[in-house]
Image (cartoon, rainbow, N blue to C red):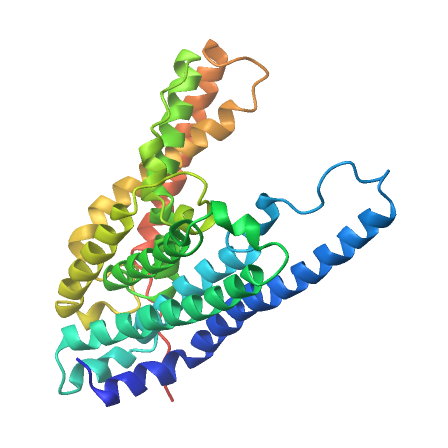
Length: 337
């Protein structure tokens, strides 16, 4: 698995995105922290000159904590990580480059694990180095006392686990998707599927009963970006660790039995098509019912609202059936010159 040729092959293919991750974490941590510290000093000087205008502290623990997670760069980082997985697997299917890869004298498991390790090490190394540089900047500043109430588990380990698990999940989706666009789309859909499906069922229940289903907090623990975006709650860190291991093991096995003749299609494994088709149709139908029922001026539980719900359900059921039928017959491949 630790073959130099394979490492160079993956690096050459993904070096632009890897460099993009390095720049993102560098600007999100050391640069942003440096600029924030300087701006806070300026604000405090202004506050000292105008005490009547500032009756409360200028800098607080929330501001310090916000330096380490949850900003726009976090969302951009998640997108880059999914795109990285898409370049590694999905784009090879679009261009049929994996025909060449599979012809190399290496095990398919080695091919996949090299891809995963390149992504894992890039994410972990760049995030770790830039985080500790930023942490050191705060720790040696006048605001170091704010860090005493936070642990590295909250500020560093939890967000990093979110990034790693998201990457591993995107790689798993890549082993069943037939091309890059469907890989990325399915990654984001299934990332938020646990909470999204609950939301659809909640809408169905509300329209018909005017009541609410209990909201299971555990569902948020299965939405991996939450670990990188929100570190306020004490989420069980064992879940993303186990998920990363499970995703990687399953993905490796699936990559070993991938069929290249289905490259460019929506799914590699045709046995999954009925399951995906039913799932897409049902979810779109539930969504259509919610959207159309919301057009009525009446409250949930009203007969007219229920009728409109089922009209939207049936219309979207038909449209999603036609959409998925066409979706599963597409083939997106690019001929290499």
